[in-house]
Image 1 (cartoon, rainbow over the protein chains, first blue to last red):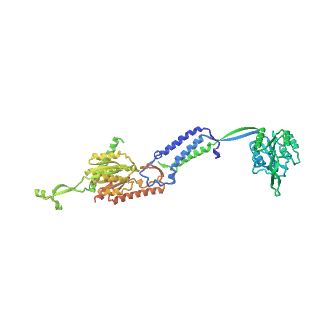
Image 2 (spheres, each protein chain N blue to C red):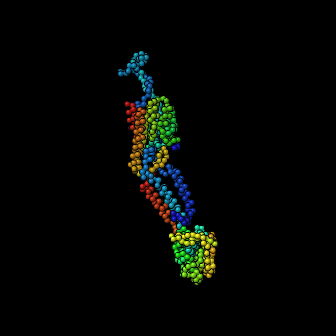
Length: 337
Length: 289
């Protein structure tokens, strides 16, 4: 019941009358056989059980009086609805998440695989950045913008759903780091935010694409975009897709984990970002946590409270009951004595 | 009620009912209730038509004139009045409440009884025996009965005629005349009544209010059952309610009539809005035939 949410009473001490009213009517109820003026009949053996609508309504007048007193008491206590408004003045930053969708992301050195973990952890990160605009760029052999910068985080979270969301194998296979970065920077180009951040997550070396990673980094620096790079993958060998069968299924095998750490490091230092290496899910979480800490947004939340008087319906009910009682008492329910 | 007021009321009833019993009921009462045995009263000279068996030979021989013995009915009957003092009698829509009428009738019967040199006893009952005043003669005794009746506060509010009759059967062994003054809002008293009527001369006097017979159409009324004390709203504008009351009254009344008629007891119904004199007179006349 939304009506009863956020209700406060300006004069709650009026409720002290309530026990008096209830007690009074309880007393009346206990003494109902002797309190009211009444006629005495020798016996009601014949007619005591015969009732009509009108005789049943005989007890309505005290009930109406009771209801009206209760309602008027509530009205006197002056219930108010509080309308709370949060005005948030946050200098949000713009973040573009760049996700690697190459087939090697299906490697199972992370459980269940790298992509699943990356999406889950990134999703948690997005949930924590309430006041920032976030965009999403996916790349493999080519790159595209999955979601432009937006504050509608549920859209982003849909794509980062570990079970559904982004999938491998939709794009030409390969790792075009430069293309991914360039697409992300392109998105941030017109941004007026104080701080612009790209979080680039990959697990391999740049091996395709017509934009070189370093030139993309150069553009990023030009537009004051900070690039945090994350390398995903254990050190050594991993059980990863090696080839594809004729039906398009991935065939898995042991292959070496190859991350171009030198390149990623260079990109991040060029743009005043930072390079991280994630070897398992926990370290990936810590990485996102530290990025979260590094990119603090200043939030200024002011709460406005507005009050709306709600006594009127109660006063109306109370007066209606009172009038109804009076009218019935002198018309339909007029009784002798 | 303080004593002065009480005595005033007693006096009022005395004056009213004494006159009634002396002038109107005296003969009727006497002939309505006869004693059993005959007792010798006097000797008088024989007149043509007298039964020859009653000639007192001793006196005839002494005086030389034929004399006969005259016998008179043995009077000195005992009258017990069973008075219903339950709450239901505190009801009246006319000049008199039912209990006032009961008190007056009780006084009339008592005075009539002492005028005939009969003994009068009273038993007050509700659903228990409230008080029993043993039969006695004398005006003082009657006045005491009236005073008690006016000032009596019963312990119980309900009515149980059967129980009163059973008590009466157990306590009074000698044949007597028994009046039951009640509104008879009760049932299941036919067995006890039959036993009582076999030995005694029982007369049931049913006192009712005309509005009990037929409820007036006055809209909604707030009423309590005098005996149970429960509050009810009655819609007297509804024919259903009025019919229910009428049916109840008729049922109750026909039970009263059949119970008294079957057991051979006398019965009389008196409404509070009709003067009881003529009804009572007719009743006595019918009995003495």
